[in-house]
Amino acid sequence: MGARIKKLKKIRIHREGTNELLLSALVIIAITLGLHYLFGNIWAVLPFTLILTAAWLMALNFYRCPIRYFNGDTDKLVVAPADGKIVVVEEAEENDYFHDKRLMISIFMSPLNVHANWFPVDGKVKFVKHFNGNYHKAWLPKASEENEHADIMIETPDGQEVLVRQIAGALARRIVTYAKEGEECYIDEHLGFIKLGSRVDVFLPLTSKACVTMDQPTTGDQTVIAKLQ
Image (tube, rainbow, N blue to C red; front, side, top):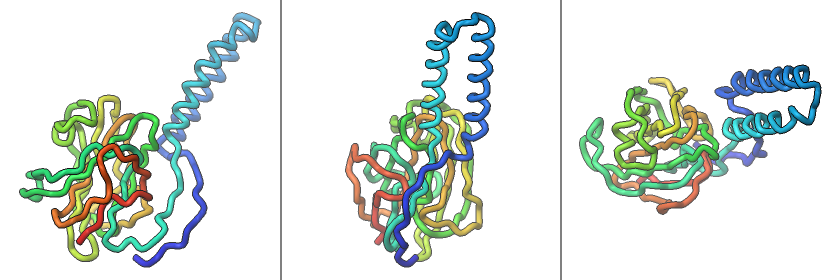
């Protein structure tokens, strides 16, 4: 795709959290009013209300969903599919689909990170597959294959295949994937969402050039993690 026009970044609440946040807010209000009616003293209720409100604000932070646009030409670029930290940059055997070595780049998302996922490349979705599994800590190597995960294969406009793997972590209990087989996909579009701590792996052709290093922080849809050759 051609150059993009830089747009103002905005923050919104992700659709995966709107119902939960609304329901929990109503519950907090109901509990506060009930306790106030029961004890008749707002100061006796206030500490409990503050604790619940703090927990609700943490959930609000988790479900925030920045509106982002990549500024520049996306041709042959691979951008970070998630906010987080680089935990793997290495050649790895991928035996489920490619049956050869690939450049593997993995991003770990802590519970404090934005948990929306973006498409890392422009192209067409070849398939989407979901696998049940364990809930090992997301940064462990075995999490990529043994944890619950969803695989999304994308074919770029020049015919290169990129595999994106959404992985549930020790806390995550739901992987949501919006990618649909046969659909065109673009950088700036949401690929999915993972609730709580989790990880996203990207498998690239070995000819790709990594643009990130271990422990480097990433911003989804903004940080260039590799260049396809």
